[in-house]
Image (cartoon, rainbow, N blue to C red; front, side):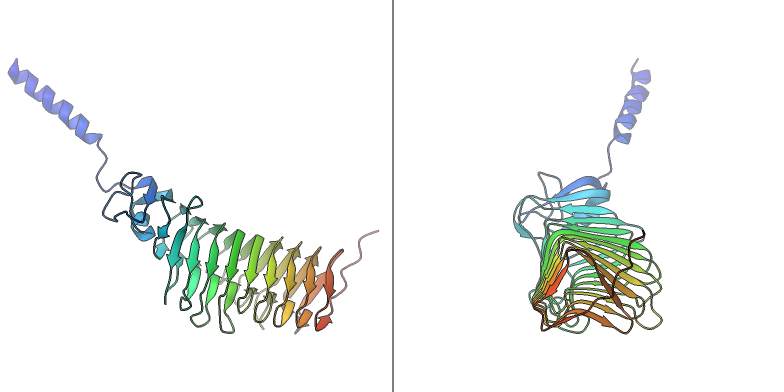
Length: 317
């Protein structure tokens, strides 16, 4: 009997062991804590300490959550993932660095509830180099002043989408290309949506530049560009560049050091509806063949120079 029982016991042991997940397996949900340890598995009861540590141990399309208020460090994201810290204070301090880099072919990234701070020397808050889409919700991005620094730099080489909502981007940029949000794709198109976004006290508020082969379309709704050093909202098509279109609805551009709304270059056009452009140096600025069309219920007033818009096409009879 013992001779036959031994193979049976060994067979059962093999089956049990084969169902045990390897120690290095990635989890679909991980956690970070200020008192965590990146050597831990990033579970709810044994959290990691940094976003970089949790990124390694989180599966594709997984979620990283924050357990308590802390600074969780800079991170480079190379796979589809969500970082959601809306229930606490989650800081990313980026002195002389980028806060979050996103660089992975075809990936989709969601960032929610983060405070990303450049401490006056950081380069870029969120740097999107490669991927399919980036969604930024309920974040604060501020203090990136190193060189031509930006709060969000969206420069994909292929077609990609950017969504920003309920987010404040302030005190970023010191040079000609610096500011709140900078969009300049390479070969593919860039589709951008801003909803309830505040762009305050940056060198420049929002700039979309079609210097590559990819066209840009940006929809800006219920948003504010205020007290920026130069322009509020800018569309630029350089000579030989691609078309750039901004659709600005129910938004304001005021108290900026130069233009409230600027269209520069023959391929740049801006549509403005139900919006206010006030107390800027220039309200509407059409430069080098750029076109601004202002529709019903938009106001341009109390600027040093209000500027002018191109009359929109008459509606069909």
